[in-house]
Length: 164
Image (cartoon, rainbow, N blue to C red; front, top):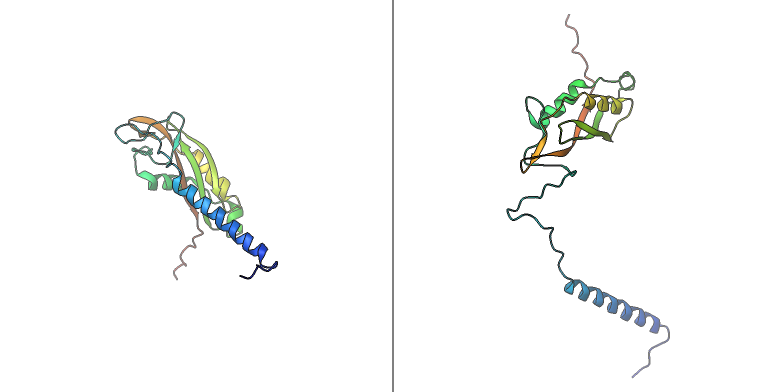
């Protein structure tokens, strides 16, 4: 039998070491204990936690008169004033705003998630401040805080040409 060349010996040792550690990693992954799911009440519903802000609940917050998410976006859009600076620069696009409807139905923690500048972001925050008090969202019959992120569109519309 031929002895290993000194040039190949380090390569063979590196490969053997790599296979050894890969084998240990595979064996560990196969024998690891499963991660238990968080405990839930017996009826399978989520536990209501005081102070938690939800993104979706059994009964979502509603504006006076209802209308769901579309009514919320429309109410914000109706209160937005197109900034003069944005008009001057023909700025158009969508501003994404996030806010929380508290357990008391009041809007809080509004912030811009994605803006377009030229004063549009500030105009959206001002419009969100003008929202009326909501009927709060509920989970298991209890009022809870719910977070929303909604798009507000800025689009310059040209008036139709005058008829002759």
